[in-house]
Image (cartoon, rainbow, N blue to C red; front, side, top):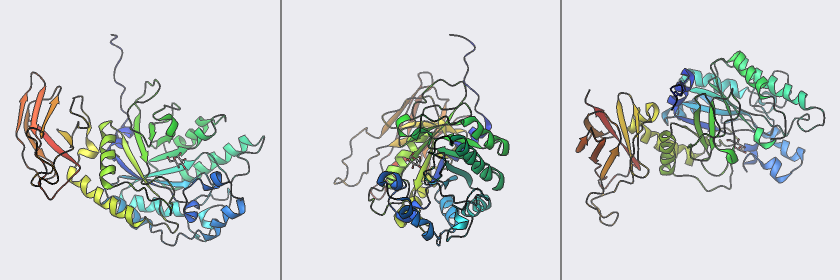
Length: 419
Ligand code: GLC
């Protein structure tokens, strides 16, 4: 083996990004008025006029950016990614003369990205701007010979966002996968970002058919749309962060006829699986037409936030440790400790729910660990019995079952090193 192969350095801004861990994705636009997801215009081939009727009805009457950001913060999110413009071409921001197809010219009469941006700054929330690269509304997008003009419009739009809203933590592009034959000239777009926001994270979604595909050398993150963030595809000498984006139900934009909401338990498991691979979870909720989060999602987010708090810093600061555990269990390392994520714990005290099986609570970690002084549940502080053979790289602890009256889905045990 060559001596020259070394782990790539992790740039500071990617380290910061990884500590954000859990982000809220907000898909909100004219499609929210139709309430049938965000692809209706394309999928149903409905006439321009009847789709754009939503423009005259978009009033953002319930959008309270400060309240929304506070709600997200209380639920454990450390960043929010807002669709400043989605594929329908409507902008939530003031395009400053590029066109009048924006929120200030709609009945909302407000620059909603300004409000969002100010609220993120006031609450110390990470601020990410989603921006589409495709555009069903813009006349140049599909017009022969007008491609360069469209790209100019795209870059100018992104420049408006990059110049006028203070510090932006990241730009989240999406859409190149829909028109693979086009010459996207990505570099020019990313240069607009870099010029005005030297520290911003650049994302360009590779989409569902291409999980973890490394696109352009200026992109910072491998995306995993609705898939486990396991393998990054393609060779890169750089370190790439990972992010899984996930829907709460089966759409990104709100849908009045979608009953497939995930449960808090499912989302907790997905979040854990992301962190197992060192990835962030960007969880989407589609606000309603007025700009408020739906009641069911709000309640679920609040519960998940409570769970996150019991895990403490492990979720945000923990990074994958090179050890082996059974099935879905894994260990993260961070904040001067190791954190064991225990899945499938039993509930005892009630034979109708789960019959206790002797020994089933024992969990073993195989691999190099320093001498451990104590093992305790992070949520209650309860100390757990453990045995360790440092030389053989084995540690076993008794993962006590849940008493009847609790079911925490995944529990985190903190392993404190002796020194
Ligand atoms: C998919 C959807 C798009 C959505 C994106 C978010 O690409 O087609 O509408 O914005 O996922 O990741």
